[in-house]
Image (tube, rainbow, N blue to C red; front, side, top):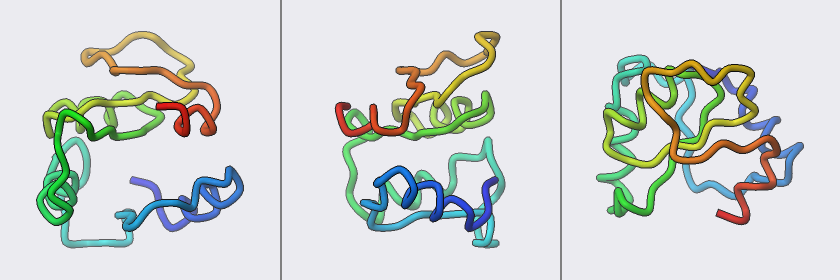
Length: 99
């Protein structure tokens, strides 16, 4: 659901390390919690679902990852009330480099 501002967030946190990012600017995928965009990336890059994480800051992101059958990382959660539990919770983007 994030627009192209994701590129600035990643750059500001020294995390501009991704091969491909899908934002809401791409109109070909259904919006979350549909896992279509995740499934596209998993298939395109032949990713192992057991080693693939989806990072998000809202319950809808965790739901999306769960529906795609991949692991999830919740960033900077202000709430612990979820229908779907994240695999990990982080409070700083740099923690991603340790995972």
